[in-house]
Length: 250
Image 1 (cartoon, helix red, strand yellow):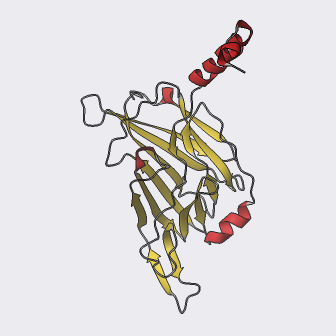
Image 2 (spheres, helix red, strand yellow; image 1 turned 90 degrees about the vertical axis):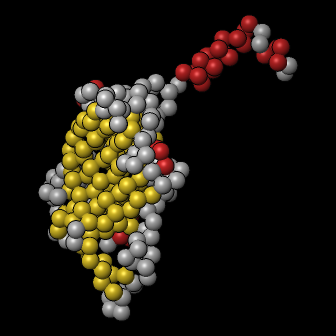
Image 3 (cartoon, one colour; image 1 turned 45 degrees about the horizontal axis):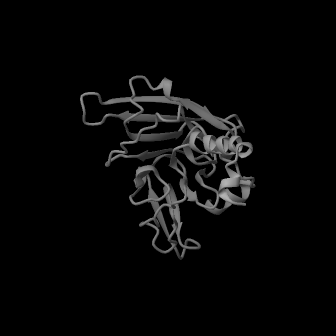
């Protein structure tokens, strides 16, 4: 069909609706799609595990002959140039509370996991823009942050894990502001953090975002977080068996 025929009046309404939809449909901003794994842990050179951990882990298939490695304060991974993270920079820190816990990233699912052995507790921080300003304008389409609990066992007990999002805008200026919001993560669901609850923040100039997952007051909780994002899009949750996933990291 010639283009001139396509643009005859009876087709114009279809073309107009299509263009309006394509131009006016806002997309979510992805803060972290969890497509970039942590680097191999430098304290586990034999195993080469792409995790951060606290407590005690075996560097090797079995100990002995492998070496037991302890992190009794914290462990961290700082990365730049990440294609799947806003600004390309991510700082991940896990803090020791009790027992052995770790965090890893599963790109095939777009998940970040936090895993605890029996009797273990820990705290995990993920920060974006810690050293290089994000300088991101969220105002054109977004109105809230979304944290997706894709899988986990926080409902058993129950064992809620408080999640705190902290946002800084206008860093280094007279208008610099920081605000936080906390929600308890319990079920596999999308948790909404409306921008309106972050008082004083200029969402046209966001420079740093951090997520704190506080599992210090619960024991042996395991969960996977889907992409960290804003609203205005739908991210499907992939079905899986959590037992198969967490068994890989304990």
